[in-house]
Length: 558
Image (cartoon, rainbow, N blue to C red; front, side):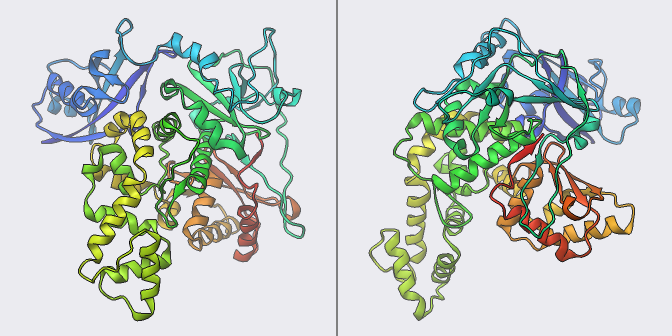
């Protein structure tokens, strides 16, 4: 038996090149153990079974594609060649093959075609008039904007902008803040200041005036792809505006670039991660029940089925495009959303319910479940039962059964309408991404930021004692953070409050005094860390000032 890894690459109609798909979009690397005599035809069938479960995938049905199997360089394979012969030929330690698919041009399918996307990006994305105050259409005359270029990275202007908000008129300032996109090479990705966090530091503490990029080059002639939609949002009104956009189901198949009004970060994935993080932060604060780590949707009177379907699309789109998944959802709710109520086990339901409660109530209920409830805790226990509309005091033998019923009512029954709407728009794709409840548990474990997991993301190469000391202080600062502050720090650096990047590059600067402060670029993501901290309290005070500011997530320079 020999190990064979399979990947999936799909033809990009714009570049006419095969692009390898990552796991959140249905791709990733699938590992198998196969007989060395397995030939290419059998390998192709295995690959199809892996990526098209029962003939279906997040990108469409199998009969919508033509397909072939290639080597790791995407070169064609002979039909008769075997696994053993491929190992001999390539001399690799682990054989990796790719399923290359091309969508059939004349096939009738449910996927949005290019002309439909173009029409949608120009008109259909507009939200209802009750929500939108101003929507800017591109002027008939040609407008040329300057761009700032850094090496091979260009900030381009786009004409297909949708602007949301509450201002009654469209000002020239708003037009000048046209959404800009970033086109860059992989080698420069970690250096790209696609979005820089800036902030005001209280008097007496260090602050830094950002440098203005000096190089100005002519506008790139490259037009944006037809299927790319550029959406501008107000940070304070992000929940209502993003829901309005996502009422159109076609947004799932479009490339979306985001921009915040009055902020200058251009979207090369970092701004998008911040949009989804900020949306779900607002959602769990304003539209969810629960006082602990786990929460479930709360019914909002003005939200009907269309709104809940839009929220389901936001959940799906964030994960498919950026591996972002809102981990504050109770695990039991997510399992019911993707696999139905029948997938829930009593233990999963109880575990989610305990996480749904605040720390004090959880300790009391846990003690009651174990039969260790103290006399001075009985009044609090009765208050908990009363809050969940249970009027009878259960005997010790009945406690587990009673709280199983309460858990089901709070997490499943009360959320039934919201769950049904979200499932209607997202379940078919999510079930392909998470084929069983075990995959959902793996997701929560892998994406949840812990001190250990965040430290593993850091990549730095200090070259002297000053840099080594600053890096040591920064790691010490991470170790001192509680969960909520750790998520905020992660969002400040990467744009996401859950782990959806592979690494965080740390670079060192030598600014001092009033010019000294850390700078985060969410595109890489990269953190510019001053190497001039004299002590750990020196670094801690500066980072505490940054993260304690209400505006620490705003992008004030490009």
